[in-house]
Length: 301
Image (cartoon, rainbow, N blue to C red; front, side, top):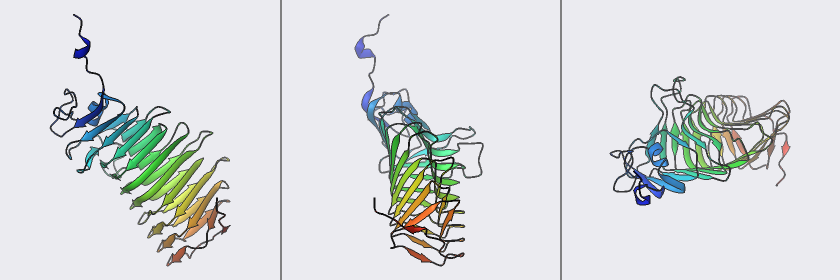
């Protein structure tokens, strides 16, 4: 028996999910799928998946350019229960693909559950990734882990990352740079707020890394690598250790209009050749071990 072309459903440019859907459905608005994973199999390259309600639709392994929009209800992606996995959301798209995650709540099982999903959103592949208007919390390793296997860019905007072990980690070991921009992002109540390691170029604006157990912001460079972190109009407050830390001769942090206060250690801490540079317009107060050491003035790029 041969099936006609009309009987074989082509991937759709727009699909839908619902808490009362079924992955056997075509993922249309009137017959939605149940999960993002199910909808991904029926969504065309560079298409869009929209949630019709605030149900639970995860996890998801994204291997193509796509937009996933949780809608006004902030659709949920929960870490798999009783199953160890790398992350609730994995992005390993192609080198020319753009992935957008918007209006999503990505929830882990708590920072003590190392036997379950270890990360909220882990990004390894793609050309451009946008995370916008999301909440990521409760993961035992990292809220957002950016570990690109090739040159790529990540933009995180209007997002909260809290109650994870690490809030955001940016790291690559390749001969390329992981580039991230964070705008209006709260990295609060984690172990560390933001950590960048080895060949990372990160710009943070209008954001906070506060009430973390250890450091607010840290840049670490090892084995001849470069880690550069620019902080503009951010706050790093009430962290258990340093507000801002740079470690290693390739680590450079530039501060502009940044507030660093009430941290358990020094406000800024350069270690092992790391540099912390200032535009001279920052505010320091009530850090337990003092303001710390600014290595010199920052030069506009």
